[in-house]
Image 1 (cartoon, helix red, strand yellow):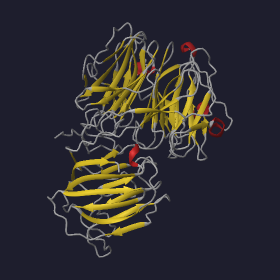
Image 2 (tube, rainbow, N blue to C red):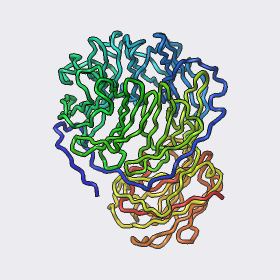
Image 3 (cartoon, helix red, strand yellow):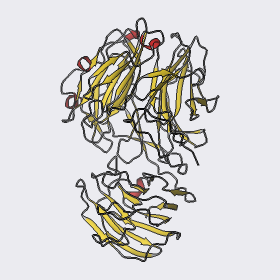
Image 4 (tube, rainbow, N blue to C red):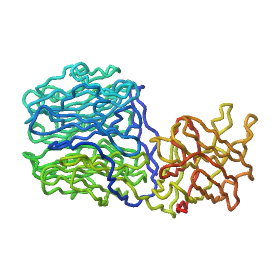
Amino acid sequence: MVSIDVRQQPNASCTVPTDLPTRGPIGALPSFTVAPDAFDGIPPIPFDSRFLIPVNADGLHGRDLLLLDSSSSSPSGTTFVYLNDGTGHFSDGTAQVLGGASVTPNQPSSYDVADLNGDGRPDIFVSQQGVADGGAMSLLLLSGANGTLAETGASGISPNPSTSANKATAVADIDCDGDVDVFQSAIGAGATSRILVNDGSGALQADATRLPADLTNGVVSFTSAAACDIDRDGDPELILGGWNGSATKGDVLLLNDGFGHFRVAPDGSLPPWHFPAESNVTVSIRCADFDLDGYPDLVVSQTDSFTRGFVSVWHNQQNRTFTEVDPTGLDWPVGWISNVAAIDFNQDGWPDLSISGIGGDHRGRLYVNAGDGTFTEVTHPHDDEPLTPIDANGDGRPDLVAPGTAGAPTLLLNSAAPELPSGDTFSTVNVGDRLEVPLGPDSAASGHFHFEARGFVDHFTPTAAGNNKFIYFWLYSGNNFYYKGDGAGFLYIPYEYARTDYSCNYGKVKGRSNSPGEWPIEECYQTDAWQGDHWYSFDIDWDGANISITIDGELKNTGNYGSNVLPLIAGFGYPPADVEETGIQGMEFRNWSFSAH
């Protein structure tokens, strides 16, 4: 059992985490196929190189792409918006989203997507370095209610100098006041690091009092950054990637006091550089809990003067220090690794890795987390370009976009269903625990899902509000990013407490329609009282929208529960839905399997 060392948090506004992640079984390797018509009808755009940002450009489903020209030869780049129709087919939405406004990139170096103005929609902050590191203003793109993006960098960032070669960017609520702030570091003569404090509306004001003096006066500078709560005290720390041109030869960990003021962690908190001090540059840092112990680890990309690269995973020792998991890491003999993303490609709950190179070797590679500190490489049919992960078709599985060297991008669909580990057991230990299993493209028309479950014991006391439901299995079509009120689906509630105001004592089925929040079908069935230690056998069969439920060999319910038009996803535990806030603890599931009819 992993223990939790909760540190004293002086700021009562900071939310200290208490739950630990569930360690589910390791899934199989995903596979990818080219979607040949994903970008049909879009004219070629001959950029020297591409800077693709997944974003909710039109305010609909959140699976669009913003392309910024990052050509090294021109300060006047071009912006292009790929609008997704929700199924993985893209069209030119530049005029619609930008409204005719000019957004002119000048060597973007890093970006973050977050809700900066508090309207519930994701915005984009882009640091720019300028041609030959000559400096450029940062970009701030705020999303509008009408599905637009407006560039407000000059008015929204104060100051927003054009002479700084901005490199590192990280966003987080540094002072726990409910809005997202920005860390930024530039290199070159007179360049500094700074915190841009958000006033809650998206207006960012530089505050020189929050960082150590050596950062604000330009003595040390950084080329990469990440923000995450490494010590589980409710506030984010800053992990800063150094470079050979800075006075400090190494990466730096800054500890947060809870109110957004930072101090340097003791020497030795982070592993030393992989390459010599006179040539090392840390180009990318990402936070992810690779071993699911509740503490964020780090994946770090470094380069030897941009001639070769190295990626390694740093393990969080739970005492504000990190150690290198495998000193051999991943060598990149030619060029360097420009971007690293930690994303769960096989939907087993363990973060995997997407790594993209630049220079002599600009391939994109995928590595699946084995759960023991090692990673297995995954082959894919378009490995000659950097990769951008995005769930393009809304089936719940991350797909990949290769940007294209002189034309339209290529979409790689995450198309294979993971192997279901039928011998493993999944348990709901903490509130919110869930396991989702993508069933693959063969599941849309018809299928059979089997599982066993036990643990029907009284954990909640009935209340007038009715927040006492055991909810533990759902099946939906995956055409909504979260299990909320949009899209068709099916939810199975095997047990409800007997209450004076509710008569469905021992189980019911709900069918969700395409209308937001509607449950047009709610059917009860009766069975004997549930036994806490008995492993019940459940079989779910469907043919289109017709679904039947069999428990221990006895047919309990059959009916039509709405259309399923995409590959299905099955889930156990707490559905990730705002409307279903309560559920179960202490349930166990085993022997789950899927077969197509």
